[in-house]
Amino acid sequence: MPKISQRKRNQAREIARKLESVNDKLKAKTSHLVPPERT
Image 1 (spheres, rainbow, N blue to C red):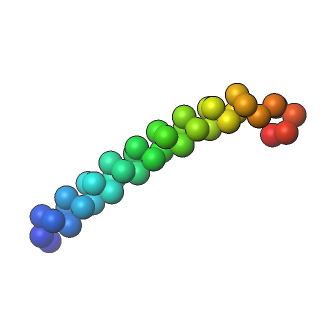
Image 2 (image 1 turned 60 degrees about the vertical axis):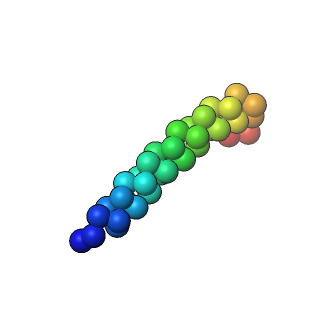
């Protein structure tokens, strides 16, 4: 397998990790904003 595909896979993994951390932060913010009765 060429090195380019491996690099792309590593980039995708990093992007997914960043998106997960961003989603966790957004969930924490929305959980603070939304009252517990709605959830």
